[in-house]
Image (cartoon, rainbow, N blue to C red; front, side):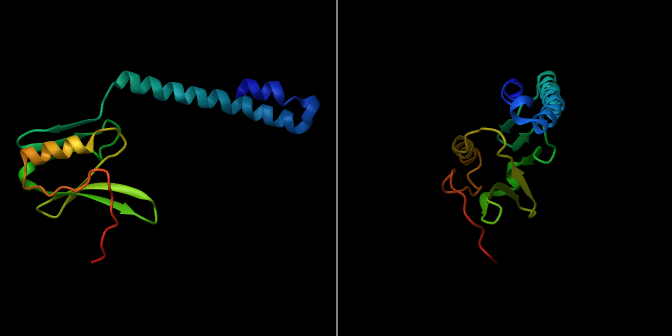
Length: 143
């Protein structure tokens, strides 16, 4: 885009406005490239990964970029997994509820097969209520 801007936004064709725009493009484009390079380098060096670990006793979720989505719960405390869809924000959420009433959010920022996860949970802990369809989200009912 930087090259295209310098090729087609010539001051001869567009006048003073092109010069001002090219001035800001010359500042913004390298800055954005530098920030992307720093971000990519940090991710490459830290080399962390998203992971869901299901054992016979616990469910552990590790999100390398967020402590909010990193948690571990004993399976005997989990009561249900629920999909929720908010019509106003068009935001989908996967909640994991516990016996104490607490809830943890399962992130959707990474690809994982909900169908395989729910099948594995059902096999290890059949007492946990799971969504009927792993790909369908419903509006919460008003209480």
